[in-house]
Length: 346
Ligand code: PHE
Image (cartoon, rainbow, N blue to C red):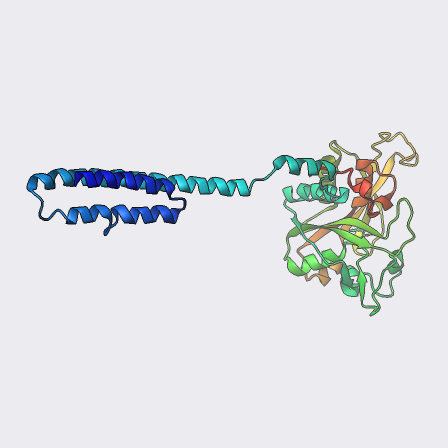
């Protein structure tokens, strides 16, 4: 019996050594230490053996069984490891290849208008303003009528409009329709800014484009005054230019604000002494603004006995051009890759 066990042990080792797959290993396991395996059958065949023999053979078969168990699980985990390594080999990524490809390509970059717009959005959200986005295709009501610009009003001539053929829809000529849309979705008090593209049918030159960018702002609450307007504008400009900026207001006319202003900043190039940028005046016109006209608030269902507010329309392209030293607005939508590749701030 002991001889048979020894033979079995050798046979087992040889077969396990040849087992290539997980299934082969499991088959060896069943053959030797399974319920109907070789070891079991040896033990079963011991019925008639002497107690002495039963003892030694029993002990030896148990030891062998344990040894086989250990060998099987070792073989299985070895096999698993091999499989994982095989998989890793097949999925190997050549990182250096990606790197060299990137070197030849141009990494993605944000458009300079996006960079400046996001910066300004951050400044306003930090002051509690919400950001609203609105449609480029507007209707007459939002772009003109609810902004106190009736059909017969001469102010409509100020904006050369791209009309759709139904003569009811148009490409928004400014972001001010978002004042109207903002009032439709918010109840006073509120404050929000709305960045986006605007469209005017204009002859283009170095400082005029048919597509450009504005950022509308509106704040409505109790007892809002021109002082609040100046405060927010000064904070905004100080953040954008990285230093305190001197401002002044001049009267300006827009049908949706009363009083309306043009906000100028002290020329940052010459410090106010006069240069070509400020046309020797010491001041640069920066943004139109004013106190929201009560009629506009009424269109927006705001209780004018209780609330008033201010609004402004910041031109983004001008700021972008000043920031990056771009001397022609037409580069912004030129689609020239050499232009876009110069801005890699993420
Ligand atoms: N919407 C005006 C324009 O585009 C600018 C403006 C906005 C003026 C808000 C006053 C208040 O010309």
